[in-house]
Length: 318
Image 1 (cartoon, helix red, strand yellow):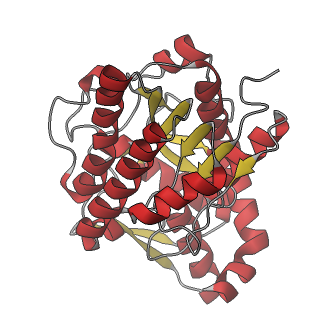
Image 2 (cartoon, rainbow, N blue to C red):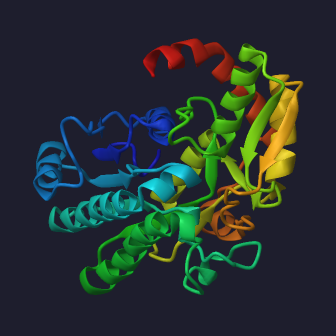
């Protein structure tokens, strides 16, 4: 039986890309008392709404996934909003969790917390050794403050909060909105749009030399729940797949899987973002037995297939 089975659990962001997967895996473990706050009912940036959420849900466990997120473009255009909204949501959720006596608080950080020039693979102890990459520093630093709060609250109040650092996520159900999507869904959409319009080239930001690591959303959800069940320290833990791929190689894989036959044009006037990203994932394995299972090419194929089936519906929504 899972430690979580009979608990009352809030999952903020539970209707989102990652959240849906987390909720599904909680239900598989027999968790039937899951409260998913919707933004129209609870604006977590506002303290009065956070207080009302705790009063309504009376949680034992909080899994805080809600975030204002986006790719390099969205981060560059909304640094103030990305800082303020993410900071206020997290800080207030943890503070009210403490005041309401929750048993455990699971806070989700981001790979963007790491310094711009972190030795590869990123180890958790390197997180304070420099400033984050400029295009997403406000978002990364807002999330990083939850790690400070987690440590401080455990020290002063004995509050059991944990902080996880997932790498870039991808998978079926991802956000394909061109205004705020991340690199994999943005590239998949670009390829299919070009095929549909009969265009013979796609333009991709940057030089293609930057590297990234990607974690399949189902694996990420499993890692979060394993940590919620088994991990009880404030030291941050990486969640990743432990591999590195250049953006150039990623684009070639997506071009091949989508069937786009045209040319890839690199726009070197646009930023690459952080030069390299790859996590040391040994702590997650040692502390709570997490290892990613999905092969990257298989995960990409599943994501492309999902988009092919749902692209018409997605374009009607937007």
